[in-house]
Image 1 (cartoon, rainbow, N blue to C red):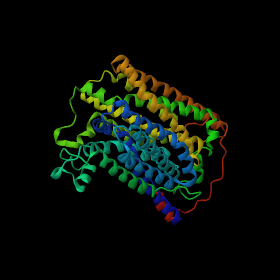
Image 2 (cartoon, helix red, strand yellow):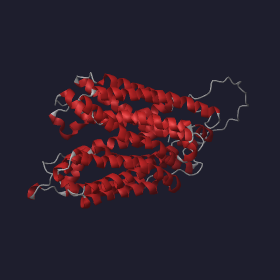
Image 3 (cartoon, rainbow, N blue to C red):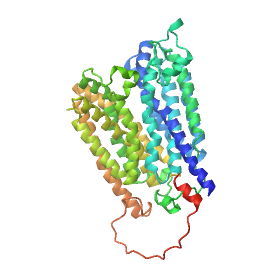
Image 4 (cartoon, one colour):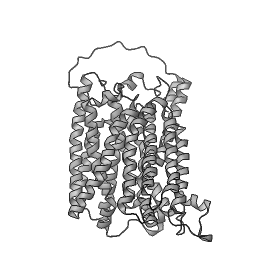
Amino acid sequence: MSDNNNDATRRWTVLAGALIVQVILGTVYAFSVFVRPLEMEFGWSRATTQWAFSFALVTFAAVMIPAGRLQDRAGPGKVASMGGALLGLSFILGSVLVAPDRPWALYITYGIIGGAGIGFAYVCPIAAAMKWFPDKKGLVTGVSVAGFGAGALFFAGPASTLLLPPGQGADAMGLSQVLLVALGVSQGSGFGIGWKAFFIFHGVTSAVFVILGASLLRNPPAGWRPPCVSSGQVHRSSGQDTEWRDMLNTPLACMLWITFIFGATSGLMAIGQWKPLMGDILNGRTFAPAWMGGFGRFIEPVGVLAVFNALGRIFWGKVSDLMDRPRAMMIMFLAQGMAFMVLVSVESHAAVFVASAWVGLNFGGNFALFPSATADYFGTKNLGMNYGWIFTAYGVAGILGPVAGGVLYDATQAYVIAFVFAGILCFLAAGCSVVVWSLARSRMQEGALPQTVPYLQPDVDVEPVEKPAPPRAEPSPVRDKGCGT
């Protein structure tokens, strides 16, 4: 019993490791901070720099499939460490290889090598956390990926300062100043360390912290279950462990994939244009008072969206534990669709704040609900590989969303059509969630899902069978202590 209590304590260190890994990986969403420095340094066009981000997103989604398979076999710590090493290497190589006549070097280093590093590391914290918390899959998945949503917010401000051209002599930044700016404590003095030095600094930092977080990731012992949770409860919380080939042959997996495409495409279409839209509405005004300095970014529209993007992963993960994944998806997508439909009439500061928070909250929920649903319906044993296939939907959305939003804006020179289309996609995703719920009920009736998945019981009257009451046993003091862990 003491070993079980030690394991119960260890699962919280696994969750801490998951957060460390995801915060570093989440800096990929701050790619925009590299755009202006690289364009000014090399004279590149906007399309030239944006291809690097597209390569990173597509590679991220594609590599999750083999990475998930490797994670299921070799364990999360080793695979996440590989991802950290690749991510760090991508920036270090980029500092050496990228040149005005070699934009392809940025595509290979940041886009392909860096994207592969993120793909290797991303799935490991999710899979490990779910196995340690089988009774709270939605919540711990939300907490695990919340770091990914918040990483860009904490990274963007310091990175923008450090990427400035370096000063000379007394204006040059020392190591202590670099660290203070990187931590967000200091705003700097108008000089940075330049893009090359920053790439090296960020590459080393990324590798060190991802590998540190990965060292805390491990799978629970065979047959382990949380204190005060019976083996029956753990079994009932997950579907039968399914291989990826069998999973892909089910209508349920296909519908999850389609739902994810609709939901993520609509969100990326809107988020990609959030800053210019909010800029037009506010006419250059700002939320942040001068005394907040660099921390004012946390209450600007993009900052508010990022904060609630992270919180939404935790919120919707918990909500889905209390009801069920498809019902939470349906409510989330309906709420998001209605927000997009009324967004174009937003004018006041308060309305901008609420809209930024609302859209961020609902978009973040995607990344808690879909991995949790994959574990619910297809088990946790092969979750790395299975969710890797489901996550390819996000790779598709990563191309469709920004491109569709840009095309609609260029054709109309207004945001109305783009956001109305995003709202329609959300309503389609809500309809698909209902189909997911129906297919899950069918699988349950066929015996592929446990009969006690919350709110998925078939409407069949069953006569209750009285069973003799089990003998009462006095609770063990050690077990009682473990229940609070």
